[in-house]
Length: 365
Image (cartoon, rainbow, N blue to C red):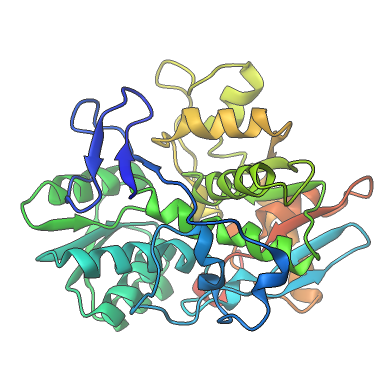
């Protein structure tokens, strides 16, 4: 039976409760969860063609909210760099991997309402899966969010709250609403079920590469949900003897908003003290997070894997989006960050996520 566990102070809570954060430190939960059994490569033949095929590794099973998410293609871009096409998900971003877990959990808990906060893609995914589950949903987004993303959220029937200010102000507004009785906070940051959904990104990669992983996995990092999911998956696969070595995790941030990269290269275990440099506008809106709540875990995961942090400029993002489009892939500006960072690597194999469709933001100005 899975339980919530605070990684800071050891506080526990039942996953049937609507307690969205640790009541002692107000930090995000981890999930104390053991896989139901050993996954084997040969057992996957004939299973459902979605992320739910890895049922032994997931904290939920037999979903009623699935939209067929997962099993996105892995396509070579160069001799050493491949792309996983997560923009082909039902709501056109990788966030569906975690959102289906949150919506399925919420459906089983039957809350009065669901709230979420997002720069766009996570909110869209939560709105879609709540529609599938028949749950009333409110999504908080910062002003300046792409109109295409807010249009998509509304189309799924969610109530939209546009918050003046940045992504951090939006998160604070949603957390205040989450404290209301009867509310399920579908937070892709605070609720660890989301991370256990995003880890399927690596399980699929492992399966498609014939039971192995590349030398490195590059991921764009704001709140770090894809990176932490990748860290969970590589740890589980290694513990079960399904891979011999864990790949390096390469975290990519926009130079304009790169608090984790700064902390990593300064050698600290957490974000640097003090107000720091104000977040500048960036085309990579999906990773423009000045103070990610799981910063310590993200930094530790990258270091433990032997990975690193890289940053990309706005000009590199523009060029990478056009370059991918010229190769046939129209990807949103956040989703091209990893290609901008590692696309010219030739000394090792690496997979990058193309994690959001270009239709969500349009071409960079």
